[in-house]
Image (cartoon, rainbow, N blue to C red; front, side, top):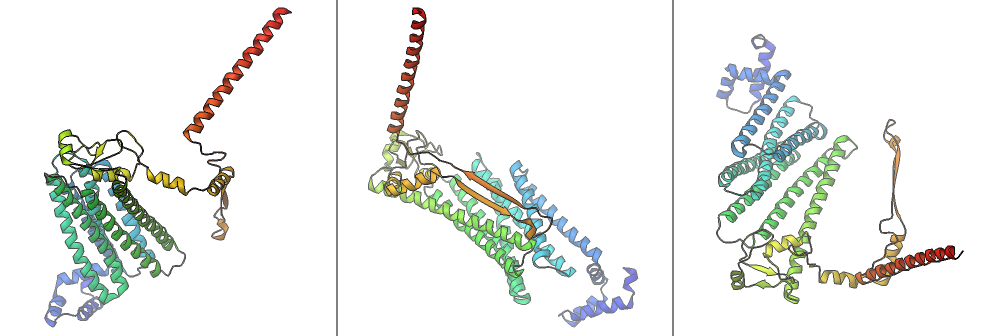
Length: 452
């Protein structure tokens, strides 16, 4: 530095850069004579020192994340540690692809700024997702966890405030550097805002549920709609962000565009899965309400009867303050029964079938023409053929074909329990007849040999 400092060309370049900054004349004069400003300019103008600064910043952020994790979360369990390492690797890999594959950064100062930005955003995302993993552990654990929840809530509120400030900063940067740059910066921050708000709502609802003396009857519905709305917000924001990246890189065939397409497919499948889960939930709620109103299959039990019986719910093992009675006379919480029917269609205690009218309506819909169609499909195997020609893309890629043939359900017909019992009886009669014939033949043979 001492050698470069007294170089006339380097000093002229330094003063020229100071003049280009939009600040007051007094500040420019102070920066021109400041040795500290010259050292900073020297560090950021040398490539080796720039990489050292980037490495130091990233390592400092990683150490800070580890310290926060140790202070707030304590020792991580095996699943949390595996998720943390996997997310850290995925974050580094995708940000590397974004910087060099999407943006195609060529200048060192841009690389420095994007690296520091993604390192900071990635640290906040890792802490938020770690709080989400810890929520799953806390809700399944027993005992007092209010101290840990208070620390995690303080962390989540801090992340929320910082992410909102970063969204505002992204808007300011986008107004000066372009809407595309602002959108790239704001997408990550908006996702972080939605995730932090989602976790805050979940933790607050858990605290209210644990510390409240009364049973929160609508907690299941509240948690379902909370998860559904915030997960869709995160997925839609991430989907639009990746779609913007795909359009930005001109949609030509490259490794970056292929990776973005794979990620877009994954996000689409996640959105579709969430929508199907919500439809299934609404179908179960509608089914319970319709059956309770039409045929009184799942009536609400009065509080006097529950207090006289003093029973507990076999699903959540809590006291039954309000419940529904099944046709098999077992009683469960309304929200517990709703969650159970999303997965199973039988009683949790005695396995009594609760399909009811839905299975009957399905049987009514089926017609004789449908039976012939089903019989045709069962008697004819299904083939799936896939061929990959690697020479279309590169000479060294192989070419192969895969054919899958299956005849699941072939030569099968639907039989009722009475029909199957009748077939079993016929088979038993035939078996007894064969045994009698064999014994009769053997007896005749023995008699013939004796006579002879």
